[in-house]
Amino acid sequence: MDDRKSLQSQPLSVAIAGAGAGGLCMAIRLKQAGIPFIVFEKADRVGGTWRDNDYPGSGCDIVSHLYSFSFEMNPDWSRRFAKQDEIQAYFERIVEKYGLGPSIHLSTELSSAEFDETASVWRLRTAAGEEYQANCLVTATGQLNLPATPAFPGLESFGGPIFHSARWDHGIDLEGKRVAVIGSGASAIQFLPEIAPKASKLTLFQRSPNWVIPKPDRAISPFEKRMLRAFPWLMKVQRLFDYWSIEQTFRAFLKGSRLGLAWQKQSQRSLEEAVKDPELRSALTPDYPAGCKRILLSNEWFKTLARPNVELVRSGIEGLDQAGIRTGGGHRNADVIILATGFETQRFLAPMTIKGLGGLDLHEAWAGGATAHRGITLTGFPNLFMLYGPNTNLGHGSAIFMLECQVLYVMRCLKAMQARRTRFMAPRKAAMERFNKKLDVDLQRTVWAAGCSSWYKDASGRILNNWSGSTVRYWWETLWVRPDEYDFVRPSRLAAGG
Image (tube, rainbow, N blue to C red; front, top):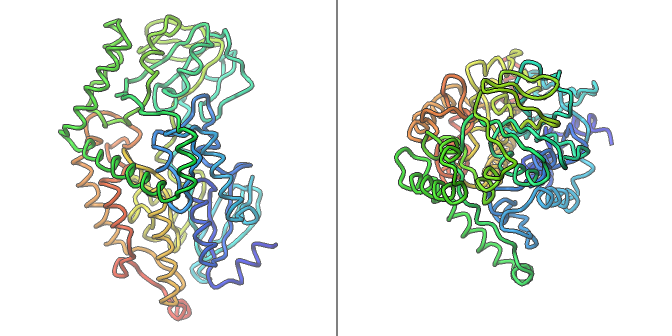
């Protein structure tokens, strides 16, 4: 099938960038509505972050029955917190069940998109030079898809293997090796306990410690699975219970929260039980309130750092050489270096080039920091819809829930255009500014606005990634499209040049 011709002839068509959780959810809803679509996926498999982050110990920190689509619950999760391979398999099954395969173009990276106002279409180009067009563009590239590699002096001079945790080299045997890990965030906290027993020496370079609380994980018994398969309503009850249990924890992210203080005490108890060395305990105790950075869940982290073959280094890295890593406190030899240095979380939609009305470049429009209307639409960029866009990340709750809210909002936008027989829509500047002004005020009430540095904030301290309230509030914000917030353009206006 020639997608260029099939989409061009349709009164409404959608191109989706990314085949992770958001892109697949969007594709399913479009297919159910009978709206033609095509999905561009730069990798050779679907799955997004769960395809990329296949490091040892990789798994979710949201309970399994909540980290799945509400319309496609899974009775066969093996654990309360699913591992990477199960989540990846879940998304691959969804592609097969809903027949999405023919509409997904794998190994096809969308490199640019430019809105043609006269024709009311997005003109798309892939990295291979192929051209497509569609009325609407939905980006589902995520916030955690571009690995961040710090520009350490001498990075290229290291004589052994070096790789990022999101690009794990499974061909490297770590048994008996001297392994250096740079970074101690959400990825390191999962793979470090897995590789420490194999390494002869493991050196962890930590910039700042994290608040770590126990992970209430356990295996789901065969009896429980049988009950969930036999009585699907039990999964809905479980999901509802999990949702409200986690939703209540949002108050921990408000400044001065008692729950936040309770988490700090819980973390300190776990640290004291596992680590007897007072100097190491001090090095692992944060100097900022719980929640300012991402709160991490682990039952093995502190125990791992107390192992005799594990060393914690707090001195800043000065550079790398052929034999290892130089710091202000000396040199550490290494056979393998693993970068657990996170992602370029604020380069939304990079490296794509996106141009809206009048050739306005999206990344130039975001020169002062990424913003969007409800994290989904953007002034000056008609029929562009973002999933997991600016200010839609969570400190609590399931990203899947947020994605479903966004997908349904996009569907309501498409229906609004169809009902008004308009060619395109975009949020009014005043409406978008009003929304983001209130958002910024609300975010100042949260612990994310405290003094720590985190991937939630830009250099000026503005919080670009996180949503300011509960997920219930976000659901309410996206429950309907408010027509007074949007400009709808009819074909007659285009013909008249207006």
